[in-house]
Image 1: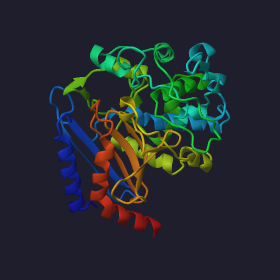
Image 2: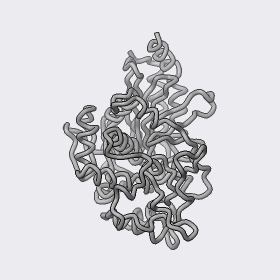
Image 3: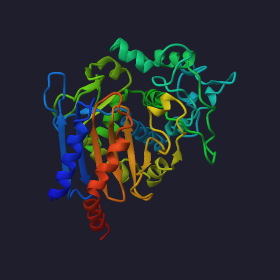
Image 4: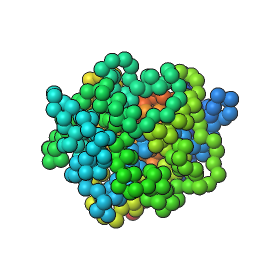
Length: 384
């Protein structure tokens, strides 16, 4: 049963968020682990026509999809089809990756492992955020020039010819490996999944995750369809205008989903329902601190004091005590999917704004403060 006080607090927080300058709309769902508390709402406009956004509207997951990717990779590892410490050269064509990582005159590409990609310890540059040797970052070009198809070959050639790595690939046995958040890592993992499985990524996701977990309103943009009728996705925005990027999102294997489906997925994952072996989930949560931001690209991505495992990140909540933290993932468009174990709460939502990557780390602590009593009661019941 909803607490009226907590519900009012959540509604006030969400209204204030949606009223901020540059935020067209906001979607938020909060659910206790035992489902005794379930609340969702949305405020603002869903599209350029001014249609009101609804809490069940699908939204672009951005980098939340890294958790989906990691889950599939680890399921393939459990079957012996992949090895985490194996070089990616064992799975990807040499012509694709040759010369991808050149550091101080040496080609380190052959040293990059599957684990390096999953843990952001490859040292590779980020294909769309890092500044190239000449000109603007790829993301800035795309926002200025408009929607277009990007092939995997074009992305990898951009990384190889226009960008500089940040450090050599880190050894798996390193006590404190360097880590820098990088979308190139997961573009390569998606390509790797297709190579190993011998099928398009959307078919692999449907078989390995969507069908078995009942994610009926989750699909790959331009590549598949939701299995249940759903609303039109909430629009992405930039500079106060809606973005139409169907070809780009298809190119990068982008995923649409709802807050409800997202929570269903994260609950199943953290309960160990996605894997055969309990140690696989534990492997995802061997945390390593991401590097301190020293440039604009790093500031636009998750960074210190965030810790990263394998496709999952952990964020300790400031001012609420060092023991309180969130596990899950966020995205560069101001979207989030997290679980707070101390309060036994799942949180999902989005503002669908291209420049809002840091927003979840400012907004979610406010949500947890509003929900602390209900979460504590739920966790107490769960322990009892």
